[in-house]
Length: 78
Image 1 (cartoon, helix red, strand yellow):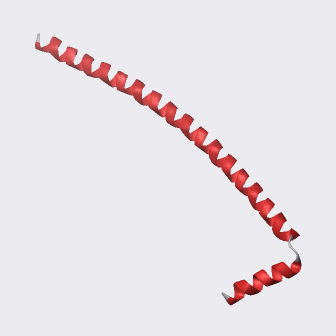
Image 2 (cartoon, rainbow, N blue to C red; image 1 turned 180 degrees about the vertical axis):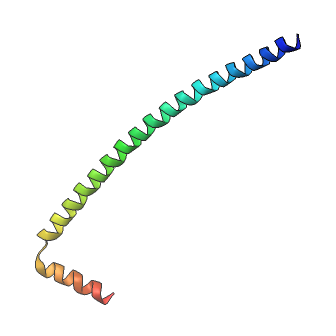
Image 3 (cartoon, rainbow, N blue to C red; image 1 turned 120 degrees about the vertical axis):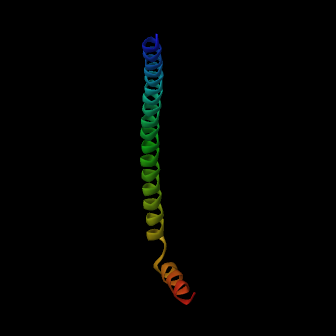
């Protein structure tokens, strides 16, 4: 009878381990999906930042040279 009880305990533990394994597998899959989503969001934000920098650079180049010179001179005095 003791042997039967020990086998039952082992069987229950194996069942619990299998349930836990399935939970961890699902959690892992969800985390990988979240990583993919965040990676796409990061890449999109980097692209938007790059485009904004390019627009700012283009606007700065359109400023008259005298305005650039005054801006640079005032920065040197600060």
